[in-house]
Length: 401
Image 1 (cartoon, rainbow, N blue to C red):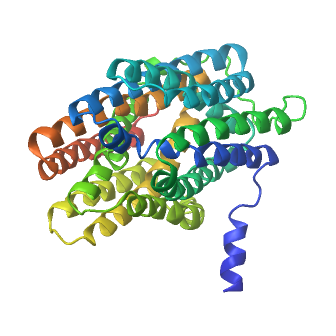
Image 2: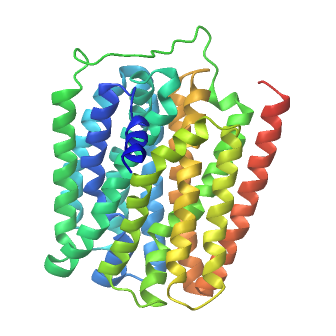
């Protein structure tokens, strides 16, 4: 047991102090974003919106996210990642607090769009910061540490969020979201001041390649957008499925979502460390994760047994642990070829596009055709994702472009 623990700790060695601070800031921020997995429940149960209306509100969420990611990438290349991260965190804190006072369909569409527009300028800036503060050989593990912080926050957040909803209602979630964003921004100002921070890998390319002309990267982005559409069902339609089909309470749903984050926190870093030293390529690992995610939906239609939701969550969790760290690492590696902010903005936008189409299409499908049909559509999308990743893997093997 002692040897196992020592080996686990060793997987974290060699990461820079700045990366650890980034992880802590991310943990504080993400621990407070407990309103996100409960947003569809809040809109249907607390505000009595139809599933169709919820779908369009979540589309506004995605449009704001896409706009914020694009804007964040542009501004990061122009004025640097530090200012963008600070402004984003502090402004988002105030916007989250104000969001709870919006009750109409139109105001919520606009409010959620603005929140995500400001909040997601942070994402490309954070990726560029992570790249700058990491040695080249440590970038995949640095990405994994940030993901661990995100998932530790998400493991605690939904569980605590479920308790808050049952005790003081949904309004408390917005206050906690806002306060934690402000705390994360203040901590960033305190510990990661540019004069105190040490850049370990400042990538400068003489003739930077435009991400828009990188065909292999576009194949990757399309596959990630499809992956994201399916994955995001776990934060919109899946909670409704748990509640309406398997009669789970908000607290039980929070625990189930929290299990995902906890398992990632415990197992992802050792798994990534082992896979880094294996013979598998980044694209091959992303492909394997996509297959597991498809299976997580396939099993839901096999039985009415309530325990199948745990099986589905486990399959999705393993798929996520394998696919996402290496998709992040693939994007960072590709970004060294050109404008880093532009590359990382497009990577973020791929998932923003998932928000635009994923939540809304899932809600509309469930509303019109039911959960079983919706899961079958998600499986088809993952099959297309897998085919694209196979094509990308073969393209990269025979061509260096």
